[in-house]
Length: 372
Image (tube, rainbow, N blue to C red):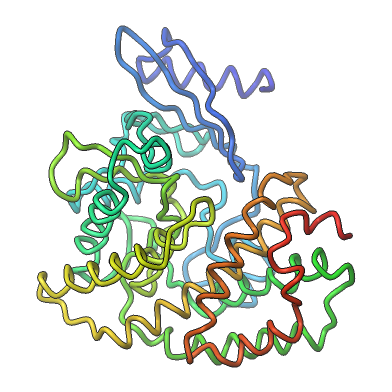
Protein backbone atom coordinates (compact mmCIF):
# COMPACT_ATOMS: atom_id res chain seq x y z
CA UNK A 1 0.00 0.00 0.00
CA UNK A 2 1.51 3.34 -0.98
CA UNK A 3 1.96 5.89 1.80
CA UNK A 4 -0.67 8.36 0.53
CA UNK A 5 -3.36 5.71 0.30
CA UNK A 6 -2.47 4.43 3.77
CA UNK A 7 -2.70 7.92 5.21
CA UNK A 8 -6.07 8.54 3.53
CA UNK A 9 -7.35 5.26 4.95
CA UNK A 10 -6.26 6.17 8.45
CA UNK A 11 -7.93 9.56 8.17
CA UNK A 12 -11.16 7.91 7.03
CA UNK A 13 -11.09 5.42 9.89
CA UNK A 14 -10.38 8.24 12.35
CA UNK A 15 -13.42 10.18 11.11
CA UNK A 16 -15.53 7.00 11.44
CA UNK A 17 -14.30 6.37 14.99
CA UNK A 18 -12.38 3.22 14.06
CA UNK A 19 -8.80 4.56 13.99
CA UNK A 20 -7.82 2.41 16.97
CA UNK A 21 -8.94 -0.80 15.24
CA UNK A 22 -6.67 -3.68 14.28
CA UNK A 23 -6.74 -4.34 10.50
CA UNK A 24 -6.53 -7.82 9.00
CA UNK A 25 -6.40 -8.02 5.16
CA UNK A 26 -8.65 -10.52 3.39
CA UNK A 27 -7.63 -12.52 0.30
CA UNK A 28 -8.16 -10.67 -2.99
CA UNK A 29 -10.41 -11.60 -5.89
CA UNK A 30 -10.60 -10.74 -9.58
CA UNK A 31 -11.32 -7.05 -8.93
CA UNK A 32 -9.25 -4.01 -7.95
CA UNK A 33 -10.99 -3.78 -4.56
CA UNK A 34 -9.35 -4.79 -1.30
CA UNK A 35 -11.04 -5.71 1.97
CA UNK A 36 -9.88 -5.56 5.57
CA UNK A 37 -11.55 -6.93 8.70
CA UNK A 38 -11.35 -4.48 11.57
CA UNK A 39 -11.41 -5.37 15.28
CA UNK A 40 -12.07 -2.85 18.04
CA UNK A 41 -13.25 -3.38 21.60
CA UNK A 42 -14.76 -6.76 20.86
CA UNK A 43 -16.54 -5.57 17.73
CA UNK A 44 -15.71 -6.07 14.07
CA UNK A 45 -16.42 -4.35 10.77
CA UNK A 46 -15.27 -4.57 7.17
CA UNK A 47 -13.39 -1.91 5.25
CA UNK A 48 -13.70 -1.71 1.46
CA UNK A 49 -10.74 0.01 -0.21
CA UNK A 50 -11.53 0.90 -3.83
CA UNK A 51 -9.13 3.42 -5.42
CA UNK A 52 -11.27 5.58 -7.68
CA UNK A 53 -8.77 5.67 -10.54
CA UNK A 54 -8.16 1.92 -10.65
CA UNK A 55 -10.55 1.03 -13.46
CA UNK A 56 -12.07 2.37 -16.66
CA UNK A 57 -15.09 4.65 -16.13
CA UNK A 58 -18.58 3.25 -15.69
CA UNK A 59 -21.56 3.95 -17.94
CA UNK A 60 -23.00 7.46 -17.48
CA UNK A 61 -26.81 7.77 -17.58
CA UNK A 62 -28.19 8.14 -21.09
CA UNK A 63 -24.95 7.21 -22.88
CA UNK A 64 -25.33 5.85 -26.40
CA UNK A 65 -23.68 2.56 -27.40
CA UNK A 66 -21.07 4.54 -29.33
CA UNK A 67 -20.27 6.68 -26.28
CA UNK A 68 -20.03 3.59 -24.12
CA UNK A 69 -17.59 1.91 -26.50
CA UNK A 70 -15.44 5.03 -26.44
CA UNK A 71 -15.26 4.86 -22.63
CA UNK A 72 -14.20 1.20 -22.45
CA UNK A 73 -15.44 -2.19 -21.30
CA UNK A 74 -16.95 -1.11 -17.96
CA UNK A 75 -19.23 1.36 -19.69
CA UNK A 76 -20.11 -1.10 -22.46
CA UNK A 77 -20.97 -3.94 -20.07
CA UNK A 78 -22.47 -1.58 -17.50
CA UNK A 79 -20.13 -2.51 -14.70
CA UNK A 80 -19.71 -0.25 -11.68
CA UNK A 81 -15.95 -0.07 -12.11
CA UNK A 82 -14.37 1.81 -9.22
CA UNK A 83 -17.58 3.58 -8.17
CA UNK A 84 -18.08 2.41 -4.60
CA UNK A 85 -20.99 4.83 -4.36
CA UNK A 86 -22.95 2.30 -6.39
CA UNK A 87 -22.19 -0.34 -3.75
CA UNK A 88 -23.56 1.99 -1.06
CA UNK A 89 -26.74 2.78 -3.02
CA UNK A 90 -27.38 -0.88 -3.84
CA UNK A 91 -26.85 -1.97 -0.24
CA UNK A 92 -29.35 0.60 0.95
CA UNK A 93 -31.89 -0.53 -1.66
CA UNK A 94 -31.55 -4.20 -0.69
CA UNK A 95 -31.93 -3.38 3.00
CA UNK A 96 -35.06 -1.36 2.19
CA UNK A 97 -36.50 -4.60 0.77
CA UNK A 98 -35.90 -6.45 4.03
CA UNK A 99 -32.82 -8.27 2.73
CA UNK A 100 -29.44 -8.68 4.42
CA UNK A 101 -26.99 -6.46 2.61
CA UNK A 102 -24.33 -5.07 4.95
CA UNK A 103 -25.23 -2.00 6.96
CA UNK A 104 -23.16 1.01 5.85
CA UNK A 105 -21.42 2.55 8.88
CA UNK A 106 -19.48 5.24 7.03
CA UNK A 107 -18.47 6.04 3.46
CA UNK A 108 -16.24 8.43 1.55
CA UNK A 109 -17.17 7.61 -2.03
CA UNK A 110 -14.91 10.32 -3.44
CA UNK A 111 -11.85 8.63 -1.95
CA UNK A 112 -13.20 5.09 -2.28
CA UNK A 113 -13.53 3.92 1.34
CA UNK A 114 -16.61 2.23 2.79
CA UNK A 115 -16.95 0.86 6.32
CA UNK A 116 -19.60 -1.86 6.47
CA UNK A 117 -21.18 -4.47 8.69
CA UNK A 118 -19.21 -7.70 9.10
CA UNK A 119 -21.49 -10.55 8.05
CA UNK A 120 -19.08 -13.15 9.41
CA UNK A 121 -17.33 -16.10 7.81
CA UNK A 122 -20.23 -18.37 6.92
CA UNK A 123 -20.16 -17.94 3.18
CA UNK A 124 -22.44 -20.42 1.43
CA UNK A 125 -19.32 -21.87 -0.20
CA UNK A 126 -17.70 -22.52 3.20
CA UNK A 127 -20.82 -23.86 4.91
CA UNK A 128 -21.61 -26.21 2.03
CA UNK A 129 -18.02 -27.41 1.77
CA UNK A 130 -18.06 -28.25 5.47
CA UNK A 131 -21.24 -30.29 5.17
CA UNK A 132 -22.75 -28.33 8.05
CA UNK A 133 -26.04 -27.54 6.34
CA UNK A 134 -28.26 -29.13 3.73
CA UNK A 135 -27.56 -27.75 0.24
CA UNK A 136 -31.18 -27.58 -0.79
CA UNK A 137 -32.17 -25.79 2.42
CA UNK A 138 -29.59 -23.05 1.83
CA UNK A 139 -30.47 -22.73 -1.84
CA UNK A 140 -34.18 -22.60 -1.00
CA UNK A 141 -33.50 -19.64 1.29
CA UNK A 142 -31.54 -17.91 -1.47
CA UNK A 143 -34.46 -18.45 -3.84
CA UNK A 144 -36.84 -17.04 -1.25
CA UNK A 145 -34.73 -13.88 -1.26
CA UNK A 146 -34.86 -13.70 -5.07
CA UNK A 147 -38.63 -14.14 -5.06
CA UNK A 148 -38.90 -11.28 -2.57
CA UNK A 149 -36.88 -9.07 -4.93
CA UNK A 150 -38.85 -10.10 -7.99
CA UNK A 151 -42.32 -9.30 -6.69
CA UNK A 152 -41.81 -5.74 -7.91
CA UNK A 153 -40.42 -4.48 -11.21
CA UNK A 154 -36.85 -3.21 -11.27
CA UNK A 155 -36.59 0.29 -9.75
CA UNK A 156 -35.40 3.02 -12.13
CA UNK A 157 -32.83 4.26 -9.63
CA UNK A 158 -31.00 3.09 -6.53
CA UNK A 159 -31.25 5.85 -3.99
CA UNK A 160 -31.48 9.37 -5.36
CA UNK A 161 -28.63 9.31 -7.82
CA UNK A 162 -27.69 5.90 -9.20
CA UNK A 163 -29.52 4.74 -12.31
CA UNK A 164 -30.23 1.01 -12.37
CA UNK A 165 -29.05 0.44 -15.93
CA UNK A 166 -30.79 -1.99 -18.26
CA UNK A 167 -28.90 -5.19 -18.98
CA UNK A 168 -29.28 -4.36 -22.65
CA UNK A 169 -28.11 -5.84 -25.94
CA UNK A 170 -24.91 -3.80 -25.95
CA UNK A 171 -23.90 -5.17 -22.54
CA UNK A 172 -24.95 -8.76 -23.19
CA UNK A 173 -23.19 -8.98 -26.55
CA UNK A 174 -20.03 -7.42 -25.15
CA UNK A 175 -19.96 -10.26 -22.64
CA UNK A 176 -20.50 -13.03 -25.17
CA UNK A 177 -17.78 -11.43 -27.33
CA UNK A 178 -15.32 -12.46 -24.61
CA UNK A 179 -15.56 -16.01 -25.94
CA UNK A 180 -14.17 -15.06 -29.35
CA UNK A 181 -11.84 -12.38 -28.01
CA UNK A 182 -10.15 -14.38 -25.24
CA UNK A 183 -11.18 -18.03 -24.93
CA UNK A 184 -10.97 -19.12 -28.54
CA UNK A 185 -7.47 -17.72 -29.19
CA UNK A 186 -6.23 -19.35 -25.98
CA UNK A 187 -7.91 -22.69 -26.68
CA UNK A 188 -7.23 -22.91 -30.41
CA UNK A 189 -3.78 -21.33 -30.49
CA UNK A 190 -4.73 -18.84 -33.20
CA UNK A 191 -6.54 -15.49 -33.51
CA UNK A 192 -10.28 -15.63 -34.02
CA UNK A 193 -11.13 -14.81 -37.63
CA UNK A 194 -13.29 -11.73 -38.14
CA UNK A 195 -15.86 -13.86 -39.94
CA UNK A 196 -16.08 -16.16 -36.92
CA UNK A 197 -16.40 -13.20 -34.57
CA UNK A 198 -19.23 -11.66 -36.58
CA UNK A 199 -21.09 -14.96 -37.00
CA UNK A 200 -20.91 -15.67 -33.27
CA UNK A 201 -22.22 -12.19 -32.48
CA UNK A 202 -25.06 -12.45 -35.01
CA UNK A 203 -26.21 -15.76 -33.55
CA UNK A 204 -26.24 -14.30 -30.05
CA UNK A 205 -28.10 -11.19 -31.18
CA UNK A 206 -30.85 -13.37 -32.63
CA UNK A 207 -31.09 -15.58 -29.53
CA UNK A 208 -31.20 -12.63 -27.13
CA UNK A 209 -33.88 -10.66 -28.97
CA UNK A 210 -36.96 -12.14 -27.20
CA UNK A 211 -35.24 -12.00 -23.80
CA UNK A 212 -34.76 -8.25 -24.09
CA UNK A 213 -38.53 -7.77 -24.24
CA UNK A 214 -39.11 -9.38 -20.82
CA UNK A 215 -40.27 -7.08 -17.98
CA UNK A 216 -37.05 -6.36 -16.04
CA UNK A 217 -36.38 -7.12 -12.39
CA UNK A 218 -33.45 -6.29 -10.12
CA UNK A 219 -30.48 -8.48 -11.09
CA UNK A 220 -27.65 -8.87 -8.57
CA UNK A 221 -25.45 -10.25 -11.37
CA UNK A 222 -23.09 -12.36 -9.21
CA UNK A 223 -25.54 -14.23 -7.02
CA UNK A 224 -23.59 -17.35 -6.07
CA UNK A 225 -22.09 -19.26 -3.16
CA UNK A 226 -19.04 -17.02 -2.71
CA UNK A 227 -21.17 -13.88 -2.46
CA UNK A 228 -23.88 -15.17 -0.12
CA UNK A 229 -23.68 -15.62 3.66
CA UNK A 230 -25.74 -17.98 5.79
CA UNK A 231 -27.27 -16.04 8.69
CA UNK A 232 -29.58 -18.59 10.37
CA UNK A 233 -30.22 -16.34 13.38
CA UNK A 234 -32.23 -14.01 11.13
CA UNK A 235 -35.71 -14.68 9.78
CA UNK A 236 -37.01 -15.59 6.34
CA UNK A 237 -35.24 -14.11 3.33
CA UNK A 238 -32.99 -12.07 5.65
CA UNK A 239 -31.12 -15.30 6.45
CA UNK A 240 -29.25 -14.77 3.18
CA UNK A 241 -26.51 -12.15 3.44
CA UNK A 242 -25.47 -10.54 0.16
CA UNK A 243 -22.27 -8.86 -1.02
CA UNK A 244 -20.59 -7.93 -4.33
CA UNK A 245 -23.78 -6.46 -5.77
CA UNK A 246 -22.37 -3.17 -7.09
CA UNK A 247 -22.76 -4.31 -10.72
CA UNK A 248 -26.53 -4.78 -10.35
CA UNK A 249 -28.71 -4.09 -13.39
CA UNK A 250 -32.33 -4.35 -14.52
CA UNK A 251 -32.63 -7.60 -16.43
CA UNK A 252 -34.19 -11.03 -16.92
CA UNK A 253 -35.60 -12.68 -13.78
CA UNK A 254 -33.83 -16.00 -14.44
CA UNK A 255 -30.32 -14.53 -14.45
CA UNK A 256 -29.61 -14.63 -10.71
CA UNK A 257 -31.20 -18.06 -10.40
CA UNK A 258 -28.72 -19.28 -13.00
CA UNK A 259 -25.82 -17.58 -11.20
CA UNK A 260 -26.74 -19.64 -8.14
CA UNK A 261 -27.48 -22.96 -9.83
CA UNK A 262 -24.69 -22.95 -12.43
CA UNK A 263 -21.97 -21.74 -10.07
CA UNK A 264 -18.61 -21.50 -11.81
CA UNK A 265 -16.76 -22.39 -8.60
CA UNK A 266 -18.79 -25.31 -7.25
CA UNK A 267 -20.68 -28.23 -8.71
CA UNK A 268 -24.47 -28.08 -8.64
CA UNK A 269 -26.18 -31.17 -9.98
CA UNK A 270 -28.90 -31.03 -12.62
CA UNK A 271 -31.27 -32.56 -10.07
CA UNK A 272 -30.69 -29.79 -7.52
CA UNK A 273 -30.94 -27.15 -10.26
CA UNK A 274 -34.29 -28.53 -11.42
CA UNK A 275 -35.68 -28.75 -7.88
CA UNK A 276 -34.67 -25.16 -7.13
CA UNK A 277 -36.00 -23.86 -10.44
CA UNK A 278 -39.37 -25.37 -9.62
CA UNK A 279 -39.15 -23.89 -6.14
CA UNK A 280 -38.65 -20.44 -7.66
CA UNK A 281 -41.68 -20.89 -9.91
CA UNK A 282 -43.75 -22.02 -6.92
CA UNK A 283 -42.52 -19.07 -4.83
CA UNK A 284 -43.48 -16.57 -7.51
CA UNK A 285 -46.91 -18.21 -7.82
CA UNK A 286 -47.37 -17.81 -4.06
CA UNK A 287 -46.62 -14.09 -4.32
CA UNK A 288 -49.31 -13.70 -6.98
CA UNK A 289 -46.85 -12.87 -9.78
CA UNK A 290 -47.65 -14.84 -12.92
CA UNK A 291 -44.55 -16.51 -14.39
CA UNK A 292 -45.15 -18.75 -17.41
CA UNK A 293 -43.05 -21.83 -16.68
CA UNK A 294 -42.13 -22.78 -20.24
CA UNK A 295 -41.17 -19.23 -21.22
CA UNK A 296 -39.21 -18.82 -18.01
CA UNK A 297 -37.22 -21.99 -18.62
CA UNK A 298 -36.40 -20.90 -22.17
CA UNK A 299 -35.24 -17.48 -20.97
CA UNK A 300 -33.24 -19.09 -18.16
CA UNK A 301 -31.51 -21.40 -20.64
CA UNK A 302 -30.57 -18.43 -22.81
CA UNK A 303 -29.20 -16.45 -19.88
CA UNK A 304 -27.37 -19.51 -18.56
CA UNK A 305 -25.62 -19.98 -21.88
CA UNK A 306 -24.89 -16.26 -22.09
CA UNK A 307 -23.42 -16.18 -18.59
CA UNK A 308 -21.28 -19.29 -19.06
CA UNK A 309 -20.04 -18.04 -22.42
CA UNK A 310 -19.00 -14.83 -20.69
CA UNK A 311 -17.33 -16.64 -17.80
CA UNK A 312 -15.26 -18.87 -20.09
CA UNK A 313 -14.00 -15.70 -21.78
CA UNK A 314 -13.36 -13.90 -18.49
CA UNK A 315 -11.36 -16.78 -17.03
CA UNK A 316 -9.20 -16.91 -20.17
CA UNK A 317 -8.75 -13.12 -19.94
CA UNK A 318 -7.78 -13.32 -16.27
CA UNK A 319 -5.04 -15.75 -17.26
CA UNK A 320 -3.72 -14.06 -20.40
CA UNK A 321 -4.09 -10.39 -19.48
CA UNK A 322 -3.99 -10.37 -15.69
CA UNK A 323 -1.65 -13.28 -14.93
CA UNK A 324 -4.17 -15.18 -12.77
CA UNK A 325 -4.03 -18.80 -13.96
CA UNK A 326 -6.00 -20.20 -11.01
CA UNK A 327 -9.29 -19.38 -12.74
CA UNK A 328 -8.52 -21.85 -15.52
CA UNK A 329 -9.20 -24.71 -13.13
CA UNK A 330 -12.90 -23.83 -13.26
CA UNK A 331 -13.20 -24.13 -17.05
CA UNK A 332 -14.20 -27.83 -17.07
CA UNK A 333 -17.16 -27.00 -14.83
CA UNK A 334 -18.16 -23.91 -16.82
CA UNK A 335 -18.11 -25.84 -20.09
CA UNK A 336 -20.07 -28.66 -18.49
CA UNK A 337 -22.82 -26.20 -17.61
CA UNK A 338 -22.66 -24.55 -21.02
CA UNK A 339 -22.99 -27.84 -22.85
CA UNK A 340 -26.02 -28.62 -20.72
CA UNK A 341 -27.53 -25.19 -21.46
CA UNK A 342 -27.07 -25.63 -25.20
CA UNK A 343 -29.37 -28.65 -25.21
CA UNK A 344 -32.40 -26.35 -25.07
CA UNK A 345 -34.04 -26.12 -28.52
CA UNK A 346 -33.93 -22.32 -28.53
CA UNK A 347 -30.12 -22.53 -28.52
CA UNK A 348 -29.78 -25.07 -31.33
CA UNK A 349 -27.96 -22.65 -33.74
CA UNK A 350 -25.37 -21.77 -31.11
CA UNK A 351 -24.90 -25.41 -30.16
CA UNK A 352 -24.10 -26.18 -33.79
CA UNK A 353 -21.70 -23.23 -34.05
CA UNK A 354 -19.76 -24.21 -30.93
CA UNK A 355 -19.69 -27.78 -32.21
CA UNK A 356 -18.00 -26.64 -35.41
CA UNK A 357 -15.66 -24.03 -34.00
CA UNK A 358 -14.55 -25.25 -30.57
CA UNK A 359 -13.71 -28.98 -30.48
CA UNK A 360 -14.85 -30.92 -27.45
CA UNK A 361 -11.22 -31.85 -26.74
CA UNK A 362 -10.30 -28.26 -25.83
CA UNK A 363 -13.53 -27.01 -24.27
CA UNK A 364 -12.94 -28.36 -20.80
CA UNK A 365 -9.15 -28.11 -20.79
CA UNK A 366 -8.26 -26.45 -17.50
CA UNK A 367 -4.77 -25.65 -18.84
CA UNK A 368 -6.12 -23.88 -21.93
CA UNK A 369 -3.68 -21.00 -21.56
CA UNK A 370 -0.72 -23.31 -21.98
CA UNK A 371 -1.78 -24.05 -25.55
CA UNK A 372 -0.72 -20.58 -26.67
